Image (cartoon, rainbow, N blue to C red; front, side, top):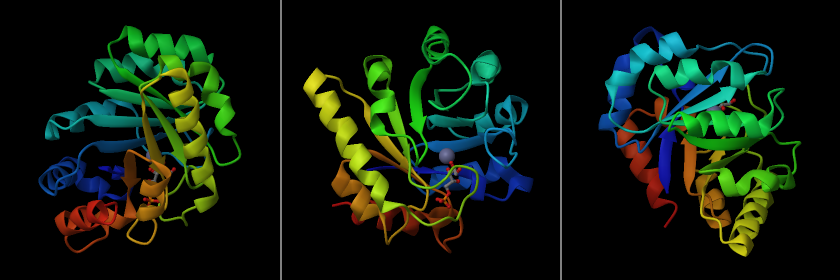
Length: 216
Ligand code: DX5
Ligand code: ZN
């Protein structure tokens, strides 16, 4: 299991050193939640802030765009050094064009589905994706309860990929911690985002180790 700490739970007054702290704690990826106050009822940061914190770790940065029109901002994030961009299938941008735009900038691409969106919504795009992110909470805020009833979507996406010979990573985001990660692992999740569980732990390194151990 790969663990991607969500910076949404960090101390934003020292985001760079929080990223360094997660790097040293053994984070596999850094997960950055970009919210526009329109697609979700919360606002975080955009590409200018992202650009200033990108140098604080060599690990892959996973940019989760919770914004209404992701296509409009792909170049900004690409110029700011994004490794991976995921955007919501429920957004207003043309999906295929946005996927191609991200790929054309040499960036890995993923689609995200909200809790009310069925797994089938991403099926038409699977052959062009590097990852699919299944939300296990309503996007917008950290610290919410894990929705275990989203896990059958992980199984359905995996089954569809296997049937079509497609290899991609499946990521889960929201409410993942010691009490829930084993269920995600059993469903076949490859990458778990964890905000509260890692940032609010006394010892982030131990928290990440425990999360990984619970998947075996
Ligand atoms: C929610 C974000 C998540 C969130 C996860 O909209 O996409 O990445 O920060 O936080 P926890 O792990 O606290 O649920
Ligand atoms: Zn996220």
